[in-house]
Each structure stands twice: as C-alpha cells, then as structure tokens.
Image (tube, rainbow, N blue to C red; front, side, top):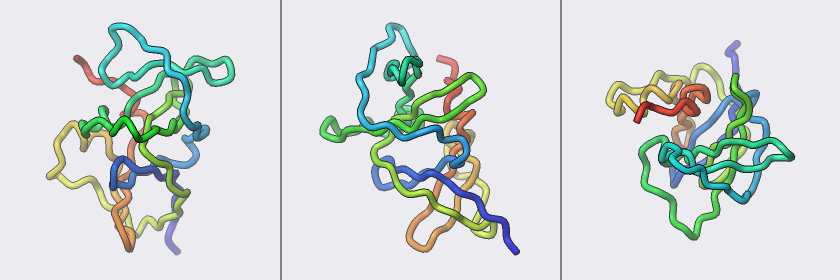
Length: 144
C-alpha cells in the first residue's frame, strides 16, 4: 500500500506547482494591494484579509520567472507559516490533487540552486510534472 499526499495546485504560465493542502489557508481572488516602500522586489505589498495584514509575495519573482502579463489577474494563495499568513501571487489556481509517494522524485540537480532550494520534489503525472514547493523556504526572502 502506498502513502498518498494531497496538494493544492496552481499555475505560473504553463508550469504546474503544488503546496501541501494542509498549509493552504484559503484562495482569494484579486485584492487591493498596499505598496510597501523599500520592500524586497518580490514583496508586492500588503492585503487586508478580514482585518489581518498579510504580506503578498509574487511567486513569479520568487522563482526568477518573467513578470506576468498585465492582462492576467493574479490569484492569492494564502499559506500558513510559523510567522502567520502569507499570500503567494499565482497566475491561476488548479485542483487539489492526491498523488502517490511512488510518483515522487527529488528535485533534479540540473536546476539552478536558487530554485532547487525552494522545491521539495516533483511528481510525474500522466500529463505533466507537479513541482512541489516548500512553503517555509518560499516565504523566507533571500538576502539582497
């Protein structure tokens, strides 16, 4: 019997990513962002989520991907961390997928170190790869 894991999936362009479903607090459509002066380039701003200020990190910038097209309205994936809620901006939300540990592989050594450190591993699905991110590493900003 193989152990399975559930992931909340989302897309950045055509690439499929996932986060442990137990770490995802909620999915929120477009929110008004408040700019934070002198913040790291990846911090897009703050949103007010029912009275709680939540830092918004642009996942495209965190993964060194090109900025999204202005016509694409991003989605907020709010994750729970040890320091509270943090929102990750993504292009499109996917489904919750349940995958078997038999499909799991470690991140390839050929990835750039900056990206490899953020990835827990990949699952080979019939139609694509599911790249699983480590939420704690994703929300910790690198040194400037």
